[in-house]
Image (cartoon, rainbow, N blue to C red; front, side, top):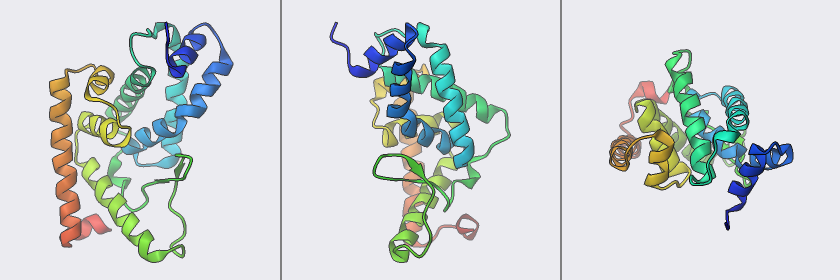
Length: 200
């Protein structure tokens, strides 16, 4: 069967190939780290969660079936892990404000640079990240997961539904509600009506 490279690699991982696992880790680490950050709002903790997620991926490699896309399987593991983390109640996404990470050209998660670098554009970027972060904070965990997979990872509704173990209709509803919430926050920012507490 003509499987894609990710699927082929994951099947090798299931057979105990550690080099294939390292290849998948390098290939998907940044997107998983971004996903985790949207939940905990802390870059260091997001990196810890990413490591945990890939450990789980390795341990559950034998349960992977090539009928599902590798990315769907990966984000199912990531979603379950992040949702469980949020249920512990130790982390809040309130810190997703002006310190939200940006991506470099390679897609890696980086913290914002010094204000001295293009301060006019940096301010705009920080405000945009703050608005999105604050909007995500107000979403339910499942809305945040669905929105992140759709808008930031470009995953199809069907694949998000598989990752969340929900129906496509439910996923569409989650993403619709999340999109409206984010749009309202961005409109408020553009209109200059973001509450003072949100700009702190």
